[in-house]
Length: 523
Image (cartoon, rainbow, N blue to C red):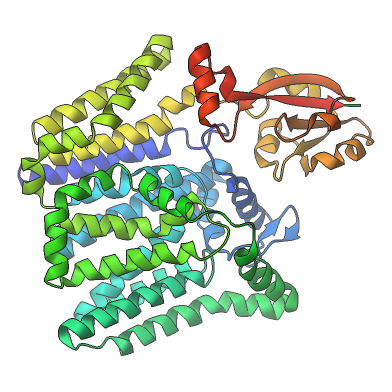
């Protein structure tokens, strides 16, 4: 294909990815992370109360995180005329697409990496898709320091001040997403890179890095300084002691979760790495500059998140863009085309799984869902045809489209509202509580205040006039609800589905074992 053809394809696939990233993005029942409701509510309260510098949650100061992530939807709120879940999530989709394109253009300019390939890697990985459609911090926490490092690399190569300024701006913004940990990770990475440069060229970049880290530290510290001036020890104890140091002595989780997250969120492109292994070995052997730059960044942005006790799969996300860039530099398109049959084989388990899911959904679907499921199956078949014909650039992008189509469109068949429409009349003139840490999505569904409580508070809350409590079966032991009146019940998907649940569902040929009861209780 000619460069012009690839440019047109780049525009077409960017357009298709954009449609699917924004597709029904404000749906309350769409897949979400546990703390998304907290972040959305903080962002909305900051915007609605014009309290820009201090994050608030349910009317109280809440310094769990710095404010930049909560600011990101503000331009969309302004355009929409109000704060909303749609605006918050759309800001993450826009950031993912915009910075994905920026990374693709940068890799083309600096290393002649085909932008179509970069587009597939940055927009078509599972991690990008999952967090690009939810208002979680993983997107901003991973992409902002990554873009900052790209401009820093430019600055080290050219000494052009414009690159230094952009590197500092993105770096300072990144440091105000989740705190100073971003500066620490970047500092460790650049320290290792300095060791590499000294070994290879006897070259020092200490002066450039000193001013870079000094600038982003001073710029990001302005918010900390203003907050401390206004609130003193209240701010210091909340943010630095409780929210940061406190992370190291919370309930420990196994390190394996972060490694699982790395594999999961780098799919499907991690499967391509074995086909580029020869070039990886060569680049390490000849001390290739850019290979070491992205590898040490990936290493530091991954290993740092193994230190806190409270580990989770999503802790791997900050390292993913560096891993994508590292892999893109190792991939030779001609080699990949020659090994098309091998790639077809290694993707076979995923493709067979997707095809099985697609045909199963087609069997049970009707109406509009038939069209969606048919498109999904067609995308999988088309992807495999392109791989077989060695049109790898198109195949990788259609594979990315398969994943996001599954996440954005196909999955919508299984959305369940927090409260079914038929039950809304039961809440008229009621005082409502939810047994959960947060109640944002129930408030949005019912368009009324819903107080989050613990199950031990049910009896006390029901003493209030016209009080009712919503609780899932898993949230409240039977002894706390057996003597209460059940006004209604409905179902929701279980939060943590395990193999016994899946096995029971397959045996019963029903989704019921994957769901749990939700009760509306009163005295």
